[in-house]
Length: 326
Image (cartoon, rainbow, N blue to C red; front, side, top):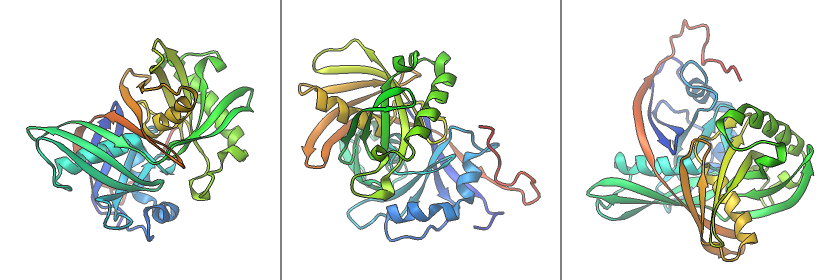
């Protein structure tokens, strides 16, 4: 990349979690598929660093590069990134990207109906159903890759947890297991516990994807609180700590899919999961269908544009692409 070039982005938030879409200045990352491009992306990392790190980003920044889809059956391909690298899946980002595709005319949208936006992500092909009224986007339903339980009652780092897959691999446990609740005042301690738990799972057999090792590794740790619900509607508050101590402000889309896989296995009558984030925003999730590879989750959410940006790097700037304090 020409390091004096300008980079433009359009930014959104989904349930409070940022998503920065690069519209010009992205690197040309080689690969025949989106998953291959994810494997190769760390060798073309300058733009991600510039946009995630301070002073242009922050330790909890999230975004993407648009890339070609794997074949003409999809509308878009996407590489998701954060301050520590590239993820295999991102539900909140898929929701934002679908809204962006309609806003910017990347797909032909029905102004008074539902438009499917098909996206190739590293974990597979997903679909976002964008509902519009009078040309305005009202909501998005994200239909994920098959999601499944990987392991139960795994004992590590002094706790017992479950492991499941929703496009990325997550460890789940009640916040009470570490003597806390999902509340902003406990966030620093929850991050510390998540880092400790993730480190203990780094080489554990449950962190391996069953069919493709490129999708292996525990991406995040989900702490949850049970809320009053019914036999058919489960309500939980969660916080997902992913990568190296990053905190999802939303209920976490792929994490919600991973939680739904566990809950659907335990509750045959389950109709929906009402999933709250640590800031009080929500996703509604349900099992759309069941396949031999796992459930197909559907997750309802919405994203909102927060700005359009042009970023520069002064070649004389000694900080270069920036820095991270945590």
